[in-house]
Length: 206
Image 1 (cartoon, helix red, strand yellow):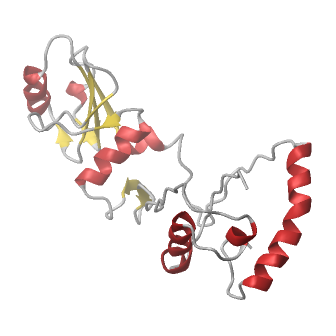
Image 2 (spheres, rainbow, N blue to C red):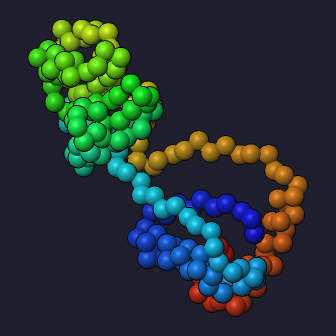
Image 3 (tube, rainbow, N blue to C red):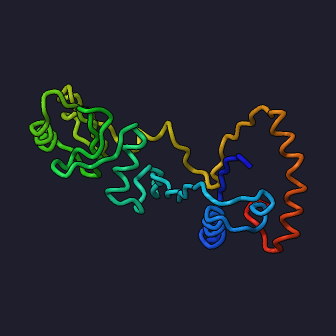
C-alpha cells in the first residue's frame, strides 16, 4: 500500500501480538490485507521501547536522576540530549561520546572537585575539548580550563523535558490533506471488510 506506519502500544500485546504479526508480514504470510494486496513479503521495521523518565522528583521536590538508570544508560541518554554520538572509548574512560574528532562528552554521578578536574585535563590533548555532565561540582572548577565545560544534569534538562505529568501528552500537528491520499482512504474500507471476511482473527492493519 506504499505507506509508512508508526504503532504505539502500552500493553504486553506489543510483544505477544503486534511484533509477531509484523514479522509474519515481512515473511510474506498471506492473510488479511496482505492477501488482498497480493503481498509477497519483504520490508522491515524498527521496534523501540520507551525508556523511563530520566529525572524524578524526590520527597523534597528536587529533581534527581532516576534510579532505574545505570551508568551506561545515563551516559547514552546525556550524549543523545547534547547531540553527541555515544561511543565509549576502550582506552580513556572519560571519552564516552563525541560530536567531532576532538570534542568529547563525559557523564558521571560523582561530585567533581578540582583534583578530579585537573586529572582529566592532564589526560587531554591540547586540541581536545570536553563537556562534563555531572550532578554537582565545586565552584572553583567552573571556568577553570577553557577546553572543559561543566554542566549539572538536572539543570541541563529543565528546558527540554516536562515533569509532573503522567499522561505523556504530545503536541500533535495535523498536516494538510493531499487529494491522492484521500482517494486511497476511500478504498480502504472495502479492503478492510474483505480482510475481515478472510481472517476472523483481528488483523494488525484493520
